[in-house]
Length: 492
Image (cartoon, one colour):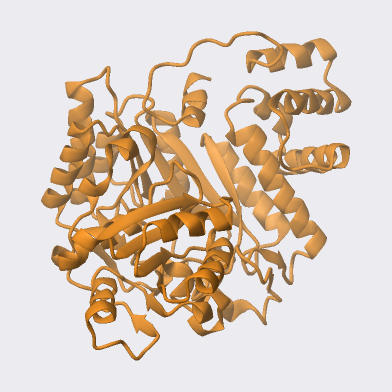
């Protein structure tokens, strides 16, 4: 084994699609290449020991916003104990502002952008000469038909225990300035028949959960319908052995043909992640986001009322021009539409994204360390931004978890954002914690808050009992291939 492909995944259940693409496209070097994945939080010296035990000549690391700090320590340690080892970096975190990064200084080479062609070529030059003179190599984007699909490289262990990431296309035609996809010129599809043949093979091997990483699943409706029909056929053939598919959707593009297909999916088989980000037209203009808010709201309402799709809708706090009041207005509007989850995100300044152009005008202040979260801006001071960060965390624990489905609407009342912000401030004041809050303790805190805001003790007990708190058993959830959190929403 000559070349080792490695990364630090956020969790064990996250299998790296990027590494598998590289391995699939190594050509003559594939037989000398293998993958070794780690998980963030692993001890650096133990990872070094495992890497060196494989005796590679080249190690390629996939570097992302969530793993760059730990990967930097890993690279630094490798260079101390094995200076002969050639280290090549790739991935979105090192593809921009490369010269400013310590991890890039430590490494021998960096591939920016697409690595499918450039990384194998670079490895060949390192091994066989002539030795590359340049440290940074801009990735060459090949025609999509020339990229070998990687799905056969998911192991039986991956299929049994990990999320399988797949993509029918790369890129995005939209220019939202907080997103790295703003730098893409368009979206590039893979051949749909070849892609579905790979999905067929995965399904035949036992895969039942498919997470699409396409930025715009519903951009080409004909392709979308073909993909959905693939999963509908599987559900019809084996309803007792269901599949589960996750897609990212453009919120204001849902023609009748797509609605007709969506309506055929039974509960627990389909999840949509929909990025609203902001309902404020001024903010949308600031970040170059084109969105018909009325159509987007109508489509979300239709999906909630007329389909069994699990709905996960995103909002981002901290965007340039977004005040707390305007964010609250958008949050309340989205809550009223009825999605299962509202993903309350805090703006991050991803390297290379055009959001940087607003820094001076809007007083955007970002954390200098990953994940580069916004700390304050012209309209939201630091202490208020911290309150929003805590709101997001408690919202995930209470509302998005699916463990308080009956309680949350009562807790929110007629003023959802204002009510939950008050609860968030109170729970932080009484726990001084945003993590490691046990479920039983959290239920007690929710009950205390309801009591302190005027609810009768018996009513509090009854309400929490409906969500399974204070009782020994809940009703069994229906069988599903969906993740546990989605199943809880489904069973409520």
